[in-house]
Image: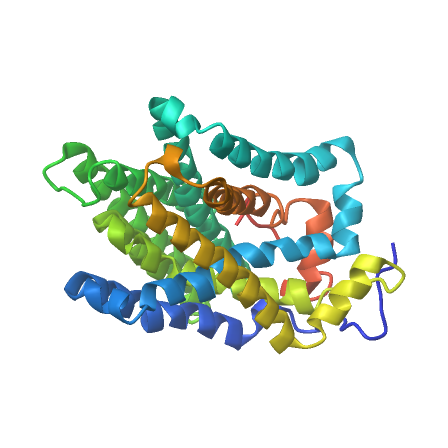
Length: 372
């Protein structure tokens, strides 16, 4: 299928993820945002509230990273693939639609009031999807950093990383459901922390071994730095759940960084209406991100109003529009978690052929985890 357009940029000759700037932005986020925000939250959390740091952070980085996922539906090549089989139609159209319908029905039927026990399980499931999504992205981007190094890592390194990030998912949930603070007196928390520390050391040792055997000592610096930074970010969330939102700074920024070539460098087909529309939208990046900010701002504002109402009213007393808005926003969360588990599968021939030339050199075959 030919997907070229004269006014659309061709895939860059130098793979996007082989450039220095994207790596500097991702790694720099830890020092510029994660650590300062977590430190302020621990020392003077009122400061973040007083100057609206938290809502601005959630709006400009968090909500936008949910909204920008929708742009994949504005590209004809993706839509053609999504519509290419009944299985794909189910995965990319039916299930996402069902997610939004589910949350609206959940709100309209007031299941939180009728079945509070079920609501607790339901909300716990969303929390699990959130934490799992974050750690899976960290695992996936670690693989991209390893691919970028160009070195062959020992076969046991990848599953060890996989085990580590799965364990971090469990530890984040354990802290959340244990009152929001890590308790060293809790034997299960202490055991998980000891295992996570051991796995972290093994992973770093694997990176060092790879670097030494290759003779390229600096080649693994970026993968090591990224892995350690995301490990510390997750550990801060394990230490205290209130820090979790700020621990997502790298998660949010790296997603925007990785989505840039999918938005601006992907070739488009001028014969399709969706590609013509998307080509006009992306022609001016200021307008493009301005629109993303506006949509994300509305979603964030409505959600904060709804949560404010929640503090004073029971679920059954909410006006229907408020319940609808909260349900839509929750649905957007879960939609993002689900779709993201699909659209970064470099092992899928479609995504490998479409994304490989964007992120690495043209013609390179790259492998990534099942979802980032």
